[in-house]
Image (tube, rainbow, N blue to C red; front, side, top):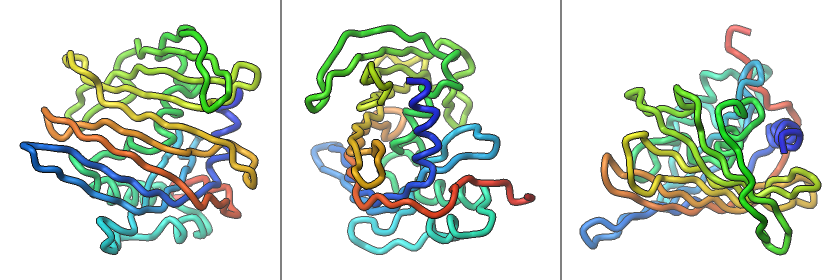
Length: 246
């Protein structure tokens, strides 16, 4: 799995896709919902530190949205795309989420959490075998044990990770991953991001099929979301972000 995730990071960092993301919650008997239609891209930060998965929101509830700054297409075709502009796109798209603004609800965030570079932060254990769309997989459970946690809220409070990974034992291919994250003080059901992957014939790699999310609305209250992906294409660039000063 470690070898697979290392090579997958390189392969996915040249891919862009279209995303349809439905988010909703029911508060006081009144449903609240938003439909985001976006482009999503997956890039590598300087020094191969981590993935940056982000969305460029095009429509919100069918109404066109024009975010400030460059689009993903413009960013990827610049001679030297810079991290400042990429993060600005991610942050601008985050405010369109239902509930608290967040940039962690992308298909590559769970993969970043379980990437080999973060292996020392977790305890892993085998958790049986399960079938995923007809493919036999080994299930691996994980719990974050190192502090400070990999993910923290703006106030600095740790969001501790745990979850399960469905891996094809022979190849290390990840077919499904569920990443739970929650405050150490919480005792309830944690928010999570669950991603399903499937083979893409033309790209000859696994791509996100579906993302399901459970998220905080505020200090209390939850919502849920479901994203689907299509129109995967590869840019003719390494899509590796470099600092603006370079």
